[in-house]
Image (cartoon, rainbow over all chains, first blue to last red; front, side, top):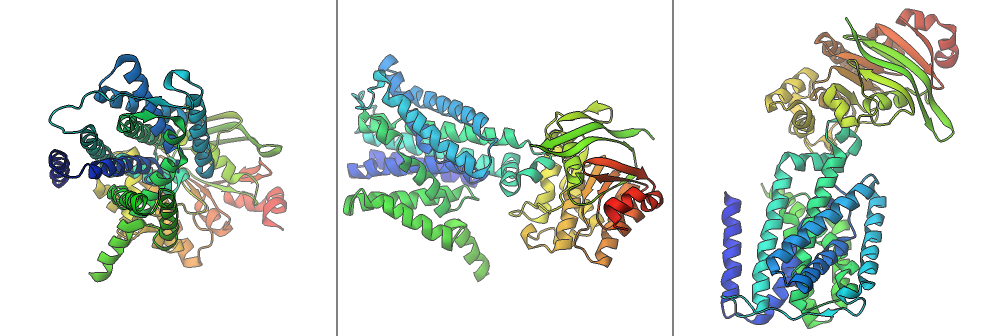
Length: 310
Length: 234
């Protein structure tokens, strides 16, 4: 109940901001930060709850973008259809990757996800219809009322996606599925011996995570009016999607949200004030600091303080 | 009483190494069964094959009459085979209570009160809210048993539940296992502490190099020359 009210407030605030006279740049940057909220939250369902580290976020995200572009180019499909289709494609990729790789443990799974990223990029580089290596310029359709600009509309769309992603992650965490995933992270053998269908749960987590990542990628081509493979399938998506939950805290659904809002905003500020190159460095340094000093992230630190002062 | 578990001619190889070479066992319902043998003789491999952590290469394993050797481990647990691990594997991010809620939720579909009942029986009730990573060695062993019990097993496999425990603690664990058996649970005990396994078991099997070298009552086993040579070191 408290959560529903909070979610409604966030959504109303996002729509309100988009309709106000606020500076356009806020929405331009805010869209990216919200994209990271979706990616970090999606990553955490498999990486945080179940402990299976996925470096291939870019594969799901990029494939989501390309699915949207194909639908747009072939059928002029509306954005909502593009997003749903991208989620379905992301889910299918997640399921497929899961079937192939989730029997692998720990580091081997992580390596396999990197391979998927490069396979996807290579496929798109060689596909003429979507522009190959040079990419494709896209003409945005007219903006829908009541929004004053396309970016403002996309900002609201991404805010909605973020709420969906967080609600899904929260449901997974508090339900019986979440307990099973935690058991898998702690000891897969013991989980299986306790009746947890480990492979099925991991497949479920990988599929849901992939669907959300795919959905997050769908509006990106419209945001940029452009698509090309190198940035769509960049390893940076995966690094950020991993770093944000690690910094925020992986045990609770709020962790990736806090991490993405914080790190995503810092990245935007650094990009504007210093340089685009430095923001990758910022992610790296913060990640190292947190892994060493606060392995349970900001949420973990906060809990520790609460316990200490009580 | 009928037969609960039938292991028939089970073999398991790891590359060129033969861990189990045609092992056959028949475990009767309600039995207290002891499995002994030197290190590397295949005891843990055998129970891994029974519980589903490993798949046997050949042979059959039947539980309550139906073949289970191709089932994944979690389904065997759901059918009533629970195990404890030699090296405790608690869900370390969870409290003792939550550890037990996993099998309760996934297998027994029971209520939370059941967990407290089990914790009481095993003597961990006062630790219910403790994080399992903060437990002592004895408590971890008890948690292993308690978590296995939360799956409401018909057959409990206790893999060296007493290794590394002191005399009084061994007695305590034995007492718990006797009580569980009295409540109708069949128990397979793997143990190196001879005094414990001999006191507990009605029937004992000795494995050596993946083969059963002797089977009988505890008294007969101790007297057996093969067992003495292979294991007891007489």
